[in-house]
Amino acid sequence: MTETRVAIVGIMVEDRDSAEALNALLHEYAAYIIGRMGIPYKQKNINIISVVLDAPQDVISALAGKIGNLNGVSSKTLFANV
Image 1 (cartoon, rainbow, N blue to C red):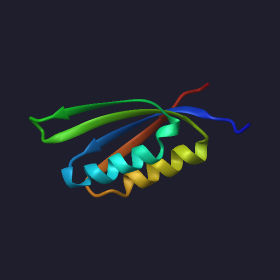
Image 2 (image 1 turned 30 degrees about the vertical axis):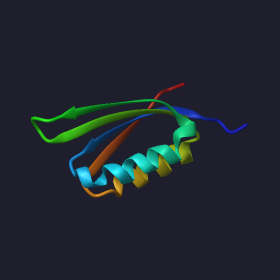
Image 3 (image 1 turned 30 degrees about the horizontal axis):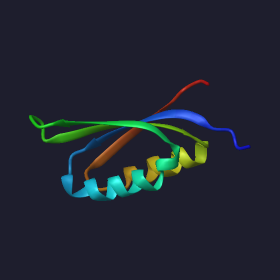
């Protein structure tokens, strides 16, 4: 059995045109997602999303890399020590 890690990916979406591609990525990795929360911040015209995963390290890194390649989208990943 492959060892998994728990991580949270914090995502800021500044370009709404990238939202469809982001949602497609999250759907692709849905089997690893424990939960997600999105907050539209209308005053600043951005969307803030947190995604919690339980997945192998390489899967988390692949998703974070793909998210980071989207225009107008930035992300950071934080890993739990469990």
